[in-house]
Length: 247
Image 1 (cartoon, rainbow, N blue to C red):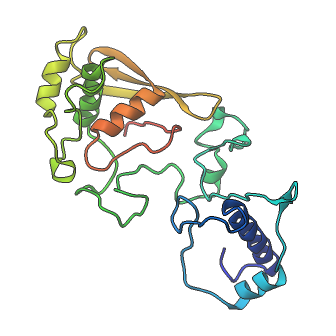
Image 2 (image 1 turned 180 degrees about the horizontal axis):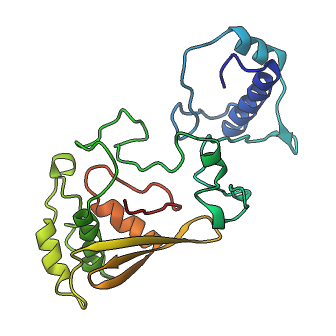
Image 3 (image 1 turned 90 degrees about the vertical axis):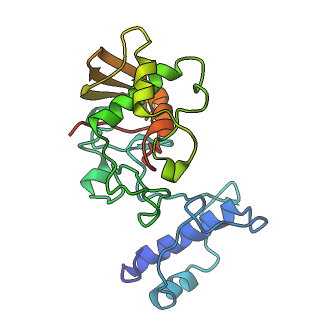
């Protein structure tokens, strides 16, 4: 929250931050990390209005049952909150993504495709400038799913083909296509469409692709797993709630 914001807003944020810190550390009996895992602070502006807000609320915390309450906050939840459900204008999954409140508020982190090594935009990108896959790359991921089957990862070789970033000895696209070709229905050689279904519980329930071998449908969790195993570079799905679109 910028120090230029209203004094009462800064005071409320100071109380929320203090309450969260006390709850997280169990009144200071354990430490708190300085990363996205626990908290994030970006900037160097201290003192001034911020110091005044902290001083004005000294000793004030939000409590429940005599203990500090964990006042967690996230700028972007992805469209679903574990405590209150769908964070959308219609109150359900039926208007996600067009009427997600984060989209309406123009959150820069909403609906973001990850292709960086970490959550920082400045982290390694393995030579990529965007998260979009080609049709051949998406077909390759579906072939990886066909080859993997119910027996687990075949020989540990279903890994990204970008060995300059990941190393290992992955199947080439051609090898994986040949292996998938031995399955009933044959290999996926083209992808013509993609659609997604969501669960009421805030996750992607299934993903369906129109392909040369007909419609291929995967459970949301299964697609997330195979995608993260095989997608090139650092492209990954990092939430159980996601969408897939075709340009």
